[in-house]
Length: 442
Ligand code: SF4
Image (cartoon, rainbow, N blue to C red; front, top):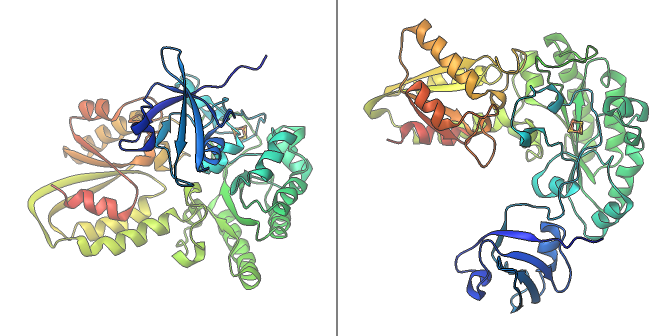
């Protein structure tokens, strides 16, 4: 039985074609030129024609046909609250380091959804493993040229990859990537590096195998495994500072070679490796346009450069005295300390940097993005008591909240936290410019 797909329309852009012809929020898109779109990719492709017939179902159940003549590629102005109309392709792996399996069991359901959907990889840069890809999916990627894709490789060695992902279908990644590359699909890859499992020679071989697919494989991000206090896998551990330094040294040597051949460093280390090694992060040009910034590769450099550029906006003095706390995790504290020194030179401005430990996921989790409402509440109260100081205003980066809503990972809302701590909370995008703007605004 084929169940007809219905894409619920969650909004219509005012003044758009859709608004003009009477398509409304709450209507359903049934077909475009008699084809049922599976997702936003189909929708965009099918509506790029000059002549489009939309079949729309109204909430009353009535169906209408809208014949539209427009410029090629002109957007119809329809908004959907989901990107895939036929559901999300779920992950079939059981990765030894999976973060979802290292979370407590009482969080909201949406946090446990393990997606592994090539459409979301293309639309949002989500990393996928290709282990659930059907031949039909593969053909569609090639035919519609769904590119770029973001792919978790971890290792090009079949035995290692299968073991890390606990899935026999994890084998054959190199030939699959080769196939996609030959079809002109651009690929960004990541390797979650686990001590004694996929590092050393295995890492070297994986990076060298991926480099053979340059320029279709555009980048390799190497990110260290993250462990929470809920991790049960005894074979996993975190890197220490000495190991991180060795990894930085090795990868830097490979980068010299790649740069000579490709004019691109090709392989990039997550910021965490430099922090752990106690080294400065490289300059902006090292990152070749920051292809993996969302993966924590180059975030610190981008933040610092954007802060330095925006310092020209800083006045020598604020009109009224202002005392603000910046809240972050242990990982970003060194960089924010340098920022603070500059900010505290401004008359009438006093900024306290509060580094919080992660009590919710465990002390080994040091990134700001995984701090919860619980951690902030606990941390701020302890800090106030220790420093005999009451904070009235706090700035937090938006990475602490789930995108699109005001919730921390533990379900606390910003409003609740603000109420419980009796202080104003400002959420900013984590860039130096936004920080400065928030500090000098009244
Ligand atoms: S592919 Fe991602 S979501 Fe799935 S098990 Fe591995 S780490 Fe977890």
